[in-house]
Image (cartoon, rainbow, N blue to C red):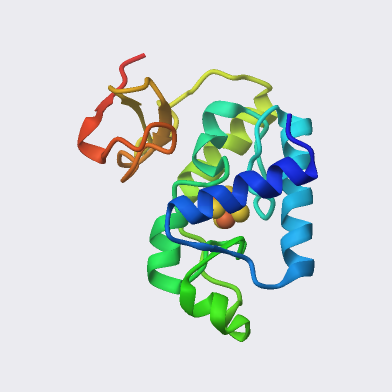
Length: 167
Ligand code: SF4
């Protein structure tokens, strides 16, 4: 488990390694880091501080920070959904920070909440026809979603390294 400073260092290092910047609004940055620390304590993993987690890890892996959607959002909007990671443009002009659309598919959010209500950690894909479980053939990471993730959040393997996981 990371404390506040360790989480901040982790986020800054990740931003630097990926060519991003951290949130230029210091108050918001502190809140987001606190949210990550709290979520890691609560769930055992640092899920996104501005999304509701299901607490069922199989359904939350796509929103463990940095989430699967970060790169696409920073590319398109200059910031991730929370504004924790931003582009150089937003870093230099913080007035560009603002809400962006949610990229996470509703089917995954619904499936996670359903699993939470049922108190199960089983991935039940039969009730969600469009949802499949994808396994990264490099590191074994599992993702419940319509299509394979563009990049594995664990080992960074590309989408073509994912195969459908048969239960
Ligand atoms: S939107 Fe993604 S990258 Fe940004 S704080 Fe949430 S989980 Fe992290």
